[in-house]
Amino acid sequence: MNRKRWLALLLFGLALTLLAVGLVRLTRPQESGRPWRETTLYGHGEKVVLLEVVGSIPVGRGLEDLLSQIRQAREDPSIRAAVLFVDSPGGSVTETEAIHRALRELAREKPLVAAFGTVAASGGYYVATAAREIFTPATAITGSMGVIAVLPQVQGLLAKLGIQVEVLKEGRLKDMGSGLRPLTPEEQAVIQGYMREAYELFVARVAEGRRLPEDKVRQLADGRIYSGHQAIALGLADREGYREDAAKRAAELAGLEAFRLVRYAKPKGLLEGLLGEGFPLGLSSETKELLALLDHSRFRLEYRYLGGGLW
Image (cartoon, rainbow, N blue to C red; front, side, top):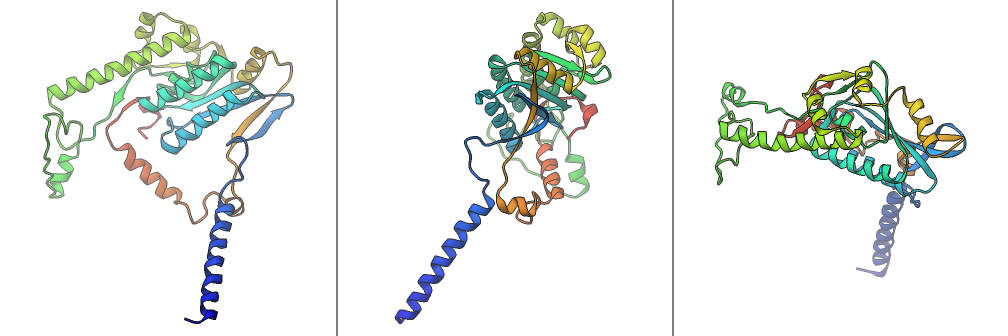
């Protein structure tokens, strides 16, 4: 190969390298000292941050994002207080506890006040108990304190389709909860013991956060829902109000005469900013919904109000 061809290949390789570096810079958000940028919703003065749990308790990347926001709010000295807005029927036990723990750490350092939307039930209520005070609309749905596990049985459907599944296992209970056969009494007892532990944790978190005797919480925690008005009367919430009322109270607890409410947003790379969040390199919203549905079909314990939807 002559010198010209070598030079051409070298220049081509260099061009590909520069193109790759340029694409990375275009698609990567600009780095800053903190992963989340702030947008002002209203007001002026020192900052009160809005944290939101809307929809099912987040999992995966959504959970990581929320925990990152809570951490930034706790570590940023310019954030003086926080408002937690909850409009959620709850979700997975493990993720709910992770959010509650992070919020509790935040509340130890800065005033945290919760505000309910239409539904703040089960896991949605659980995370709110980390706040110093809770505001709720009189007509909100809350409560639903308890644990649930949904076990779809698919063996009948598989039989109609002519599909047979053979399970090989070491360990008598290894395939319990698979949905391929009904639970045995022994398996039901095992899962019920697991659920009892999760239930007791729920009771303990409410008793601690709301400063109520555990016996009283157990009487209230039979799975039923309460209106916001009933929750205030029972000591499960503090005041009637909305997000704006909670923001004012958080600022008051922080000793602020004036405040501005800010929300976190993820910085975007240049290419994402130009093409939008749904540009072709990502999954379509329909694909994401299908993947989420498949993920939720597996067995899990949940702090969830089923009136808010199974998924």
